[in-house]
Amino acid sequence: MEAPATNPDHEADLESMQQVRRGETAGATRLFERYSGPLLRFTGRLLGNAAEAEEVTQDVFLKLMSRAGQYDGRRLPRRFPAHSRPRRHPP
Image 1 (cartoon, rainbow, N blue to C red):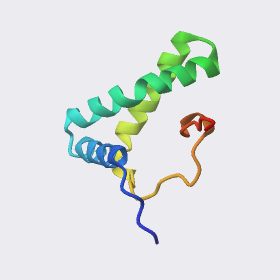
Image 2: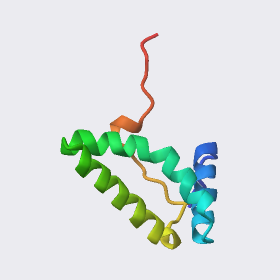
Image 3: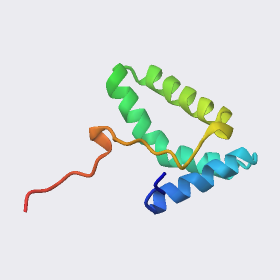
Image 4: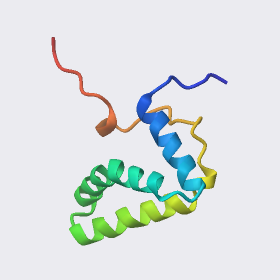
């Protein structure tokens, strides 16, 4: 199995998840600060309702924290959704 390419963001997320597993709130805070905004915008567009989007975003983070022990940082998705890919600008 091929080792994933080193990515500073991935390394920081991995460390944050390890902190969550150890019960350290700093890791959860860092992940929430990094991903809650984009997730809230996505769920808001998807659901068309700000209150529902906030609830779904909270649910996602609660589930993430409760399942931190199952996280395997070595397994990255092979494909990323279009909205998360870097945009290419014409030359």
